[in-house]
Length: 239
Image (cartoon, rainbow, N blue to C red; front, side, top):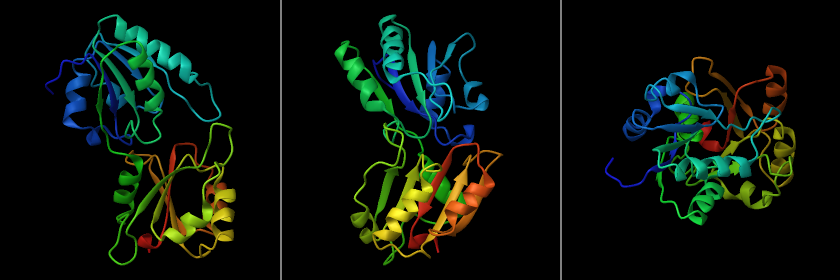
């Protein structure tokens, strides 16, 4: 990776160290400071350079969390030290990774940075299900949704537009709000028997998969009580 940057915002993929990009693996072997999410697993962190400073700045729903302002402050301080800094996020940093706030903080401090993409959970979940997110004449679009807003509830999406769009919905952070999400989509006209699936701990040994319909998936997940991160997929392409 030929670059003059000393700060990198990078995606570690859905969990498995096998799904890291070659570029990220090289950065892990060089970085002086790694500011990482809590969901970054030990197999990934084990690839860091011996002696590198590993700092957990993660956010976990329902648990202890570092405020985003504090993460930005730590990132800027690390960058100003002149060290090679790796801000390591799960999945892809540009999909629900709060990269915007961190990039703005770095720009405001006059610090150069580079973004290194990663495999997002939706792509890994589709692979786990052996179900394409798109399908000719069935699903020509994929919609990435956050089902947990900054206010703590279900964000106010345009449910009628989503129900009518006819593509695949990839829903992040949706376990707690799934019953309400399903109700909103069905009220907006989406068929109750629309294929739906959930994948917990995608790509990891503890991965679990549930296949259901839009109507039945909330109750199934409530009974399964997943404790790891879950990616939801909804759409006719899953049939």
